[in-house]
Length: 254
Length: 118
Length: 155
Image (cartoon, rainbow over all chains, first blue to last red; front, side, top):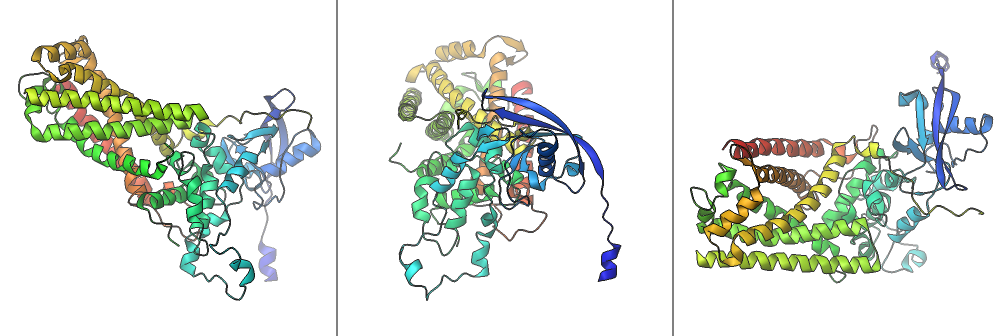
């Protein structure tokens, strides 16, 4: 073991990248571009670079982040034209010397790269993304019976449960741009995730929101949400499965 | 159109879509082999011949109704995506229904009249 | 907060949408649908007028259609022929792509099943059955263009 460990050679490359950052200024209510040159290694991420810029060049640059490891979903931003997590994108792997960083589209700006996620979270909440039982007391009082689940039942919703609510799909969706009341890929994927859970009994309650002009029917399947999702959640598949359920009258497979 | 579930509207949107593939296919196939000849009144493959063809005229009637529903529902969806508001939503529904009924009436009158005269 | 928050959303990245086939199909489906709906209204009114609203005569038909067809360009081809040709192309793309969506969303044909995700993750629009659908749409449209060109310009 110890000899194998000694064999691993970590090669560190260094290069200076130019970061073009699109910044929203709440004082003037407009956007401006700032350019920074910063040296990063091949093991550092865009978020590392932005924090380095903040520490050494421009303390006024506003970035939102928390976990730095793709778990919290705070640092989604548009990097080289595609919404991604800054903490999971390495400048060396982007293949360009000039890296453009912009705040997420379809969301209201607060400052620089920080966006207002209120609408996004409101839409998420509107689909009741939690376990709903017909008997509300049962889940708190009858603790001797639990809700069993088989492997197959788990796989019905598992891939949709990896969502970290970063808003990348929401920013990428052309229909959210066209229809600003559209629930968006994230909320609908969450609706499917809970409706396809065999422990949940709330599908009928969610229909009022899902089956509306601003629900699944605003989706026209460009699949951009699935292509940009950093967690592989595939909201487009969830929306198509919801549409199938609504059209055929059969609730999601659970 | 608050009283009808959107999924019911869309189910018919999809069903009429499938019907339209067939009847629009027939409608376009009757332009064969020459578009110009197919819109002449007389002559082979002309309009008179098309009006005399019972099967084709049945397809045209279905086309009129299916296309009107499909187009009006699609237009409504698009208009509600572009903008939403209390008055806008009602106005869209009213305009869509009026235009749809108008097309159906005009088309039916023209086709039934043409069939009974010929 | 001293400043008032902006009420306008950040502008979209159009380049993100212009590089994918799915996005082009979406844009085309929306735009062609709107154009075809407007065309349906015009087409019904014009043909009904040409049929003299139920009292058809060869004379009214030739007069109205001659008016709509417009000036001759070359051989059999009029301005109206070109317009109808382009509308037929819209119908072909809208129809071929529409059938794809209906088969997938109504009947579930080619729709992947949810599964345990493994790296590298392939989003559903990039899965094989979905790509086959999209290539079929393109093939159908190309065949249609060949037939429509013959009918409009040669036949």
